[in-house]
Image (tube, rainbow, N blue to C red; front, side, top):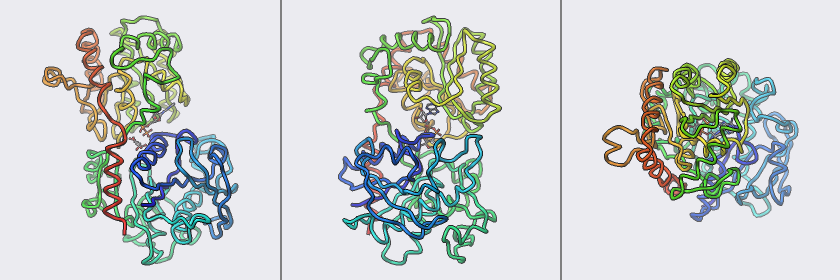
Length: 482
Ligand code: ADP
Ligand code: GLC
């Protein structure tokens, strides 16, 4: 089966969050199952530089916004064949794929990502290269690929099947209706039963309306987004498509996130040598200028800093954590107000708090290895990957019970501790008080080293690899391909 996997980011070439990790690992796992999956990416500078054996395979005409461009082919660092759209006018700029240096959306994002969906459909229509490679199925991800199923729907009967995966329903790609012809959509598509969404062109709306099947990245989030609380306006549409919507949990690439092999750590370890983790903790305390105290429970967060991620809850809960002798290390970027509040807390508690406002892949690994507890207090979390990485590193996740966090972390209740199945801590209410109580529970348990060690070993040996989830995608593909 031939599958074109369309995505706007892919680790290690371009990454702003978990979509990049998924876009690197899932196609590899599918190829291991025998699927001829190839990735289609915008030709950002980092993609054009990073594709191995890059060669031009065909010219493109009629690309929304710019007309001419080229399709190049090569191999991603993980070994998966990929295509990239070469168009300096659309993608020839460094930095964040979606935002300018000052944090505003690129003004031409509508054509940059319409082009992504349009080229995917064009590959299905006329073939990618001299071998005439045409997909049986196109798998799009998030709003940036959202117009792909619409373009494919207008191809007529000889068309591939389409799947859309929602990684985060809060990001919707909403643009002015005046752009309809610019993005090559027919006038009749501007309809409630089409691409129209709250008086604009909705890229994610288009994807959710036209795709043959919908998936999201955890079973709980699949249920949540059919409700007003989490649907962000799509609950109505999704409730009408409930039989077409599946939640498939993300996995972990243990080739990259594995404390036994991780080259970023000062000392490698696995579940049989958890005591070695202490070296990474001491190194992390030094790196962030904290007291080098093995007995102080070290909490951490590696995250985009925004309201959805609950970074404000954390800021409010931290003073109590410090008062009890805990430490915290934070790595993230995001809303300026939250960056400022967290930096101020760091400055006020220099021996207990280390705050790095920035993006640093290697440091994210060192934090996973050095911390005792990883905080994920999200108000909404479609899947979440950092809690999965944390478990493999023997860093117990402390999460709010929502989305994929609920599906992957087993709270250390008395019953779960007695059964020996607990792998972390969970709380319900999105309030600083509820988060504070969970932090307190973690601190109490931290003072019982035998129980803590048993939980670490359990978390480290849980398997969240991609093999099972990739098989679920394959089944879904097989059910669709015609
Ligand atoms: P989301 O995709 O919503 O941001 P995930 O938990 O799925 O959340 O994925 C986040 C990914 O981004 C993880 O690989 C995490 O390590 C990484 N990450 C987030 N913030 C940073 C940062 N400031 N520096 C380095 N890596 C980060
Ligand atoms: C999104 C979600 C996150 C998920 C990631 C990969 O960014 O916010 O929960 O893990 O996509 O699917």
